[in-house]
Image (cartoon, rainbow, N blue to C red; front, side):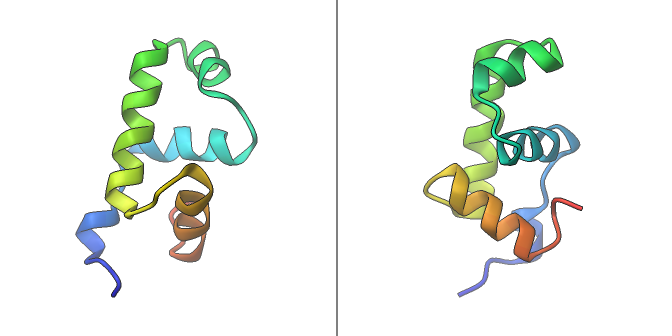
Length: 71
């Protein structure tokens, strides 16, 4: 069952963080690069996992790529 499109529309920041995760950056590295707290990075990560119905970052990347969310 594929979720409704509205459920997997990510914010600009969530998409940005997901792209950095895809590039292999750790949360701490993302936090330094974007000048935001580690807690904020982890909150965004948790939100995109929930929105995409993914159990981990790899699943989120695969799903987001499949639906063109990382372009």
